[in-house]
Image 1 (cartoon, helix red, strand yellow):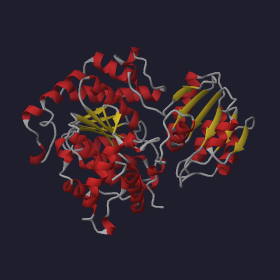
Image 2 (cartoon, rainbow, N blue to C red):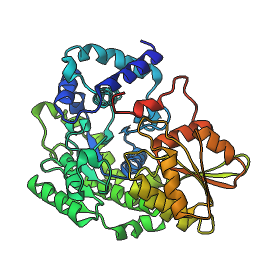
Image 3 (cartoon, rainbow, N blue to C red):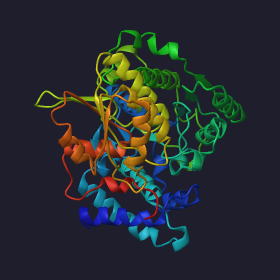
Image 4 (cartoon, rainbow, N blue to C red):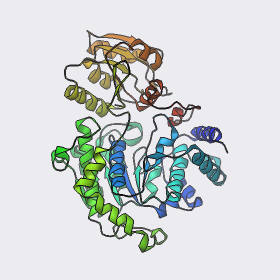
Length: 454
């Protein structure tokens, strides 16, 4: 199988849409040899900050000398971003090989039970991390947690970064219902770490941890300014990233106190590896808890597309931030006031229609000197015309224009000194290609992020 053929196959899986439940993933993993039983995980859920927290944990544990797998979604430009070992993306040849191995297994499913794109990719990642002999895998949920395909693992720690409104159609209309879905990753006796602050959400997480007899660590905002974070200059901008760092630090400290990773988790008899394979992991978990190792890991963390400031050859400043929901827009607005208090950037906005786009525009438009509205390269895009009505209402001084594409908006803003691009990670991926911040792919792979059947 060639890589283009593998990508075409992955695109074909979109026909199976999104299904919530673990039955098919468990079955596919079983057919693939249950690679999850050979691995150790930190499982990360939450509304915002999952990817950043995962990147921080990966960087810390890699600095501690472990071989670390990283599984995240969505990707910005290339599919291979989703599956990395020591921050090296999976090779195209390895993607093709894994697809060729997994295709025959899919024939054992009736068509109505065929695994989805995300279920297939989850098992692909498990096989890859096992083959790569990863000491630890930082494992990000897709949507929710309880019924998410990633929830077939038994982790060393369960992490819930925060709880905000997003994906209400699937997770429920209240913070309590959203929290219940995220808290579905909590396992019996497994430590839980959360940065959630909302009382209704926190009450659900507390109760779930209590029901599972899982020790709970609650990270408070003040901890983002305590040693060793108080003197650390994070490469990632934003006060919210300092909170993500505090959550990551709490995870590292919790696992650093675990003498034997297996004794700290409930697992099937077949899942327990030989005792001698535990020593490098145990040593790495303890090493990572050292302040200097933590500082080193956090000082080197890289997570593109999240308040990423780029200075182009022309001198133009471009700020890229996914800001894909209301809380993300609040964080972006706060960061602009903190880091660029005198600036009024030109905003290029593109938002998905299943987000709270009206309130997002109300937050961001008043900060702009000019607003360029574009469609997101997604079937779920909000129409620029609707965004324009809100932006004009909340910012009478700014010129608001609608553009047929991001490329057209970038051309229109080429001579502006400061441009902020925000509203969707899909839009950020397209911007990274157009701005040549990431190599363009021979086959367009950003469309693989679409999980709704065409």
